[in-house]
Structures are given as structure tokens and as C-alpha cells.
Image 1 (cartoon, helix red, strand yellow):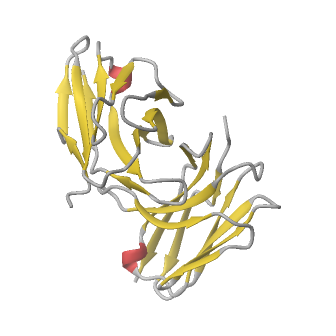
Image 2: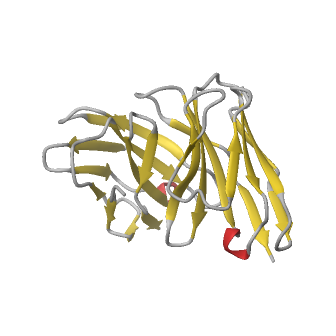
Amino acid sequence: ILNVEQSPQSLHVQEGDSTNFTCSFPSSNFYALHWYRWETAKSPEALFVMTLNGDEKKKGRISATLNTKEGYSYLYIKGSQPEDSATYLCALLTGTASKLTFGTGTRLQVTL
Amino acid sequence: NAGVTQTPKFRVLKTGQSMTLLCAQDMNHEYMYWYRQDPGMGLRLIHYSVGEGTTAKGEVPDGYNVSRLKKQNFLLGLESAAPSQTSVYFCASRYGTDYEQYFGPGTRLTVT
């Protein structure tokens, strides 16, 4: 079973702080890395799909990078806002490009 | 587009009862998935389908069966429910390799 690890498990920051979390994985034998944002009582929503080493994606204040050689991806949030509070999931697409294996997520709480 | 829908949203079953959860998508996606989400465990893949008429086992398939008779529908069956199957079930679909996965709103199932 592929082990996708996310750290930290949880994070508590103040409004305006910038923050980042890590997704690490054991090998580069995958088709894509996905990031999802998951608010409580809702369903996960896709943020980014990354496929190439060195990929950088950005959506507003949120950005992500991918390093397949060293086996990690970073998600950055610039100037955190309370509405950024959610669990951020990363997942690897493997198995003839059919299956996503999820990490357990980083739970972010942003307070005023 | 309605996206990915799940029926029902909530259900309480007694041990030994059976039920079927329906997932429907109107985006012409090839890939469909069933996950369960339990506290501290993240999203775990139960079964998946890479196209109409095909199904495959995921990480935790025991106690569940699935069918994909039509491209737009993916059914998850519990033949004899057990308390260990108390969980939130999410369905998801995806178009292809480089595309994000879209999730349904979830079904909260309690087995007493």
C-alpha cells in the first residue's frame, strides 16, 4: 500500500499569517499528485493537479510545488483568512492512472 | 450540470440489513469511485470503476459490492450491514488522467 504522508496533522494560525504544509511520498512512480480542500460537512474540492517535476500551480493566495525526485509537494497559503480553514488533502494517482491514494490531511484553522 | 449526486444523504440500518447507495454523475466521466471516511483514517478507497461494465477492488472492499451497468451510475451495495460499516461514504468521478476528481456530497450511514 502506497504511503502518502502529510505534515503537520493540524495547524493553527492567525489571520494574515502565511503558512505551508507538506505532502511526502516514497517514489516518483505515479501519474499525478492532487491537492484538495475539504471543509467540514462538505465534500472535497480540487485545488491542483500536478504531473511534472518542478510543477508550480497557483490559485489566488494558494500555490503548490512538486518535487518528484525527492518525493514531496508543498502547499502554500499567503495571508491566511478565516475562510481558508479546512482540511487540505493530497493524493497520488497510481495504478495505471486509475486510483488516488489519499494522505490523512492537514487540518488548518485560521483565527482572527 | 448537477455534478456528482448521492442518494440517500442519511441512513440508519440495523445489523444484517442490506441497502444500496446510488452515485450518479452527468459529466460523462469514465472513472468512478467509492470511498469511506472515518475519523483519523482519511479517505479509503472501497471499489472503483474505469468504465461502464467494469469494477475493481480498492483498499477496503470486504463487505461491499458494486455495479456499473450505466456509465453515469455507480452503485455500492451492503449485503449484510455491520456496525463497522458505520461511516460517511463519498462517491467521486473523474474524466481522465490529468483531471481532478469530483466528489459527491456524501452519505452518512449508521449501522446499529
